[in-house]
Length: 446
Image 1 (tube, rainbow, N blue to C red):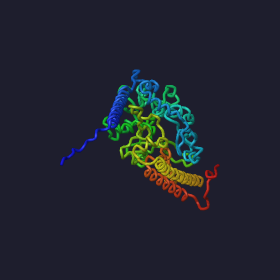
Image 2 (cartoon, one colour):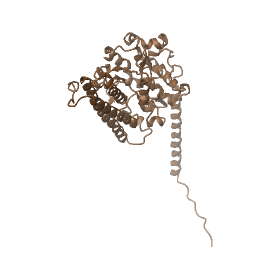
Image 3 (cartoon, rainbow, N blue to C red):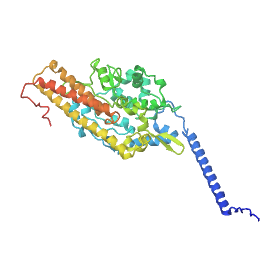
Image 4 (cartoon, rainbow, N blue to C red):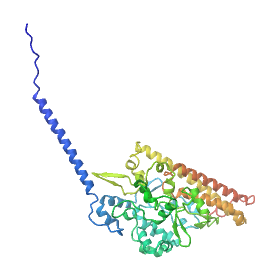
């Protein structure tokens, strides 16, 4: 009996052709990937373009833009004055019209005459030159520190004290640029740098070694040069940050109270008042994002990629209009959910602000009534001090540009204290008024 060897089928030539073609496709894809990587690497190495040498004293952003066109093009978008968010944006509306209580809260101060929603960084100098506040009150040159890129050079020429105390209206003819690349970048290395003495002085006094700052810290510090609370100290009107005790509003109040500083006397209550300016940095440092190592630029200037080039978006604006790049890089949630969270925080803060305003207005009315009834300055001292404390805290949250978002819990705490102090002021004043008098001429004003 014979056995038959098993036969082996010859591979189909079509299978061989398919394998050969597939191999060619794979090789083509690998080649395309290598070309893409090489191209993007070359793009990255060729940027910046280095078309011109940037002089050490160059302030014109357009000149810097020749070497950094992507950065410059995005910066030019800060001219957009059509962005609307629930409590901010870039449309310059009157806050005094939207929140009329502010007129009485700041009675006797320039902000009761003119207070508008700010436009983008492109208009830093323009908006300051056009505000009625520089016409109502003779402001010092210190105001130019954050509104003009010319400030560091003028400080070097004039000296720190002379620059600060020179009247703004005398100095403004030498101010030609608003925000500039030179404010934050070294023209040789393009490394982030600090150019404003007030911030450097304040941080140094707090024991912070700015030379040891990381790049991530610098991405907050360059913003904190201006987005802070400040005041003009002494006869020379030296721009100073009130941080000797710390960064909270309670610490700032202690700083001011150590020598009885006041910005103005309230026109209705005669209380010695304090006016807060945009304390974004102070508020932010008490919030979760800051404590998690998030920098200002991460949200307001998020990184973008064009081909092989990664740049920081210089269209500084609210993250609410750029959720994908500003928020979803870290928060893996739908855009609608993130916006809902932001709106919840801001709506609650805004409600607390309006409640606080009502409480302070009631305190003002009560103090005015006590004055009309003949209460002495000595008798009114405590009520006026409580008025000052309440207004300071309301202003700290009201003038901070995130409507509570930078630090929701701290903002709520501060406003709760403000309401408490306002009601205490009201009670103190009402105790000085005889029975039967419950209104004043101020409260009856239209």
